[in-house]
Length: 133
Image (cartoon, rainbow, N blue to C red; front, side, top):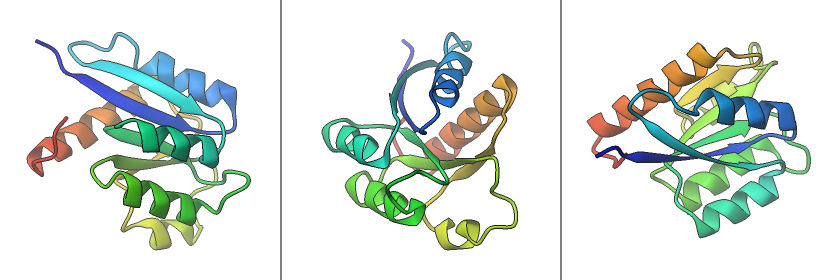
């Protein structure tokens, strides 16, 4: 019996959202369902009404400070793993400020192998910490 991993991707760029969904489609034994949102507000709305194992959050979402979005996600869904997406992450203070909230970073552009490897690593870490997958 395979386990379905529920993932939410929040990014204003439709191409990034579709790339994440395509990268995680039909990946071996794991089954992923990927929901998407283009704003932090829409993403938070989804998180309030659904359970996600993993949430990807763009580092520079319009309309809400990224650190505030991460705090809100963590308070609503403390068991969700959080990954920051960004093409501009290196050299920013966001990493230090957000380190207590995030479980990983995915630099854009990313390859299918990079995203599937990151997701696999996080899911293994979750299971080692006693979090359900």
